[in-house]
Figure 1 (spheres, rainbow, N blue to C red):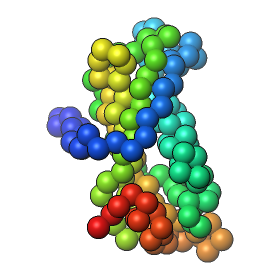
Figure 2 (tube, rainbow, N blue to C red):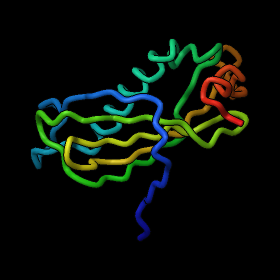
Figure 3 (cartoon, one colour):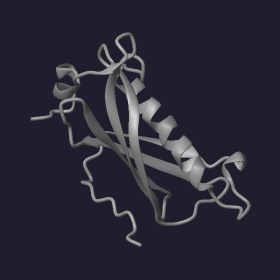
Length: 140
């Protein structure tokens, strides 16, 4: 079986630190795989807030997650401070990817990508990524 391999640039626009909580551990006493998704969700919210946006108001549209991929590299443990670095790439007419590099002071924990789709809940349909967002992230 082929393993997921995420290749992305080291061009990050934002970073935050999120500590591993006791509730983030699994039976093996390390960071649970499902909690990584929750942690990148928190980081994404902070990223959007940094630019003055939210998932429901992203320059006049909403966003939904179309897909996710996580490549686990090392274990993390209770009390580890996770540095989450975030960037954006691969814009299309109605979507783009958010990339995440998750590390501690001395090791890479995981790399992740979420496919973000711009959406209008009132019309219940996919809509174009606002030009304001493309300009913000310098999409050519």
